[in-house]
Length: 62
Image (tube, rainbow, N blue to C red; front, side, top):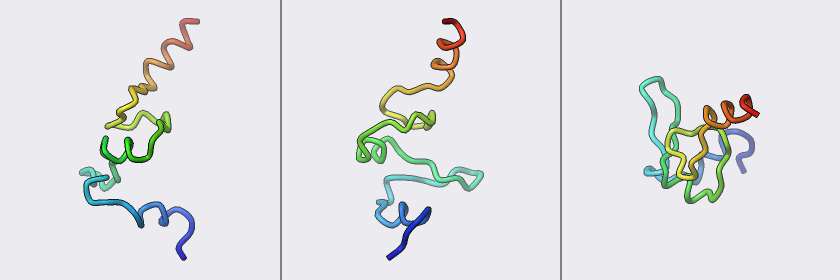
């Protein structure tokens, strides 16, 4: 059985991600919804509305 970093890719469907021009894995909105929670990493296709820039600005204004 695989463990560690690469085990997370074993159960991905083709529509869960794509590779960017730079070779990074980019998770789709469908994947995030299937996962069921926001990781708060400002993902490009985050369906939960998390935006690190807005969060950082709000913290600095307080």
